[in-house]
Each structure stands twice: as C-alpha cells, then as structure tokens.
Length: 359
Image (cartoon, rainbow, N blue to C red):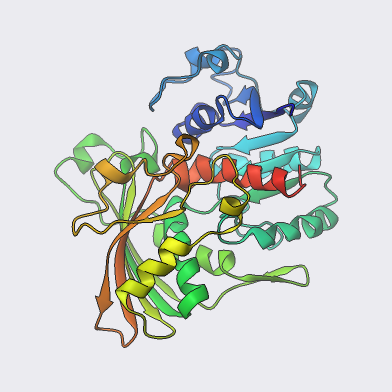
C-alpha cells in the first residue's frame, strides 16, 4: 500500500516533535512537509527544531526544509492530510484555510474544539462522531474538514469514564489532576516556580476538563452532537514531573459496583480501534495495575503495546470503593500527556479516518 503524504503544522514545538517521532516509519503515512513560524522558514528541520524528546530526531525528516503554512505549497508536495500542533490563536484561521483547500486536518489545538460541527475525537470513545464531517463540509462549503483532539488531561479521564458509563451509568465525577511540565511547553513553567513546589492553578484547565467530556461522551443525532449529562468537578495542579499526567478520580456510578467489577470492565474494554487493529491502537487501551503504589509517571508513562503504541495506553490503579457516595468508586490513572494526550491521539484519529474511508 502506497503511503499517504502528510504535513505537520507547528512542527518545531514539543507536540510537533511528537508528531514527527510518531510518524517516522509509520506504515500508512509519510511526512512530506514540516511547517513552523516565519523564524524557522527556510531552515532545515534539524536546524530549526531544538529537539526536546526521546528518541532522537529522524534523520530523513531532519533534512526537510521548513515551510510557511501555505495550503498551495502543501498541495504541490502531494500532501492530503495535515496534523496541526499550532498555538490556538494561530490555528483557527490556518486550519480553516487548509480545510477549505481540501485537506483533512487532524488538530491538537483548541481553536475549533467547541464548534458545533467539529468533533472532539478520542477514537476509542466516540468514533460515531465522525459522521458530523458530512454536515461540517455542507455547512462551510469545504471539500476538506477539521477534526480535533481534546485537552491532554481530558483524554485520560474520558478513556476511563467511557466503559464505566456504558456498564454502570455515571451520576457525577470529581477529579484532581497532577499535571506534567511538558503540558505547558518547553518555556511554559520557569524552573524557579516549579522546583520544590506544586502550582495549584493552570489557566482554563478546569473549565476544559469539566466541559469537553460532555461533548465527547454525547451522542450524534440528526447532524448534531448532543452533550452527555455527566457533571464533572475538577481541580488541576502543575507538578514537578516531566511527562505523564496523574489523576485521582472519584465517580458516583449509576448503580453500585465493586472494585473487582470495575477492574473487569476496564480490562475488557475493547473498542473499535483495537478491533480494527489500527497501528497506533494500544492493546489493551486500559491497563489495570494491582500494586498498591501504581501507576507512577516514571514507570508507566510509556505503557502500551505493540511498540508503536508506547505511551498510548491509560494505566489505572488503586481501584476502591468511595463511601462518601452511595455508589462511589475511586481510582488513580496515568496517561502520557504529549503522546496519548496530544500527537498520538491525532495519529490514531487519522488511522481511524483512513480505515473508515474518510481519507
């Protein structure tokens, strides 16, 4: 099968670098164009990108010359699919320009998440929402389209809420997050602010964690996504960890369930991407740890098999009853914020789009 040519918008930042790393040697996609701000245009990617992550920069992509975000230039290079890691204030217009020019845009930016005709996709949770693409094209007169991923904290949470909602129902959720530094970008949190410290505030994060799951867990009906009724209260905190968001989750279920029943539901969760055996789909998507002190970022951030899915699984542990709620359950989860929570989710979304005939 010939590989599809793809481009990356915002390729020099941390999430852009994750795209580069995850798409290197991908069986379905080949990176043809890397784009970044004007300061990087004309330089080879290896010169423009200060590489922050492991593994090392792929040599072939390092030799690509960074271009401006010009749809016509991308088109001349044969690109059909664009991954966006642009800052939200830039992404809104640029992503629309690419969709109008006929490109499929898989975005990690928040600029279009709340548009009523744009899905927030977590492939294991709401693949049926891809149907709204037809209405998006019709509404906007586009030949292309935009799909987005959710906030990096939301993805890990909703991955665990989906099987609970289906099996037991959910009345309400409380979550306290301990979020890694990479979620703020390389220049996001000064070292003097975070060393020997916890910062109990991340701008707009609690609002995103409370609102985005309603759309993701909602149902598609008559051309619209109808929000779910799952009240979520969140308290979000930045901690001195490089990668991997840890979350303490308290759920009031629709009916009583034991920790053993909850663990069984997590273990048996086998949604569409796993059934289709998509290249980046982790098998299983939720890993349950039995040890009393897991998950931990140092040991669990790269969970996921096969090798291409490392960092794509959500790890759950310490499942126990919560007696404050009559039907309460509580657990810890860990997900890699720039892989599962950002670039990896978009790559898996693109695989689903291709498998379902949207590309």
